[in-house]
Image (cartoon, rainbow, N blue to C red; front, side, top):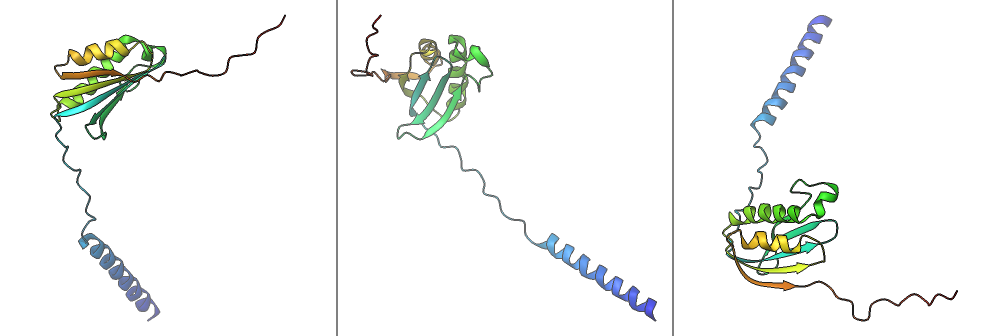
Length: 154
C-alpha cells in the first residue's frame, strides 16, 4: 500500500509539472517592438571634428538629430593612423555611404578643429555626389586667451 501511495504521488507530481510546462508553452510570447522605419531625409548637416588624434563625423537632419556618425577608429584605423588625412577621407566615405541610403542629397558642412583631416574629409564629401550648400568653420578661437606665465628672472 505504501508503495502504491508513493507511485501515485509521483505520477501526480509528474502530471502537475507537465501541466505547468504546457501552460508556459501555450502562453503568448512577449511582443518585441519592431524597429521604426528609417526616416528619409533630403537635407542635413555634416559636422567634422578634426583633432590631432582623430576625426569624428556626425550627420544630422536640419533640426539637429543625429542620423549617422563615424570616426577613424570605426573605419578600422588604430593608433597614430587615425590622425592621417587618408583616415579622415575613408571615414567620410563610409559615413556618407550609410546616409545616402536614407535619401540625403544636400548638406551644410560645419568644420571644427585644427587636425590634419579637415580638408581631406571635405574633399571626400564633395566627391561623393552630395550637393554641398555651405562650408563653415566653427573652430573656437580664444579672445584674450589664458593669463601668460610670469616673466622669468635670471
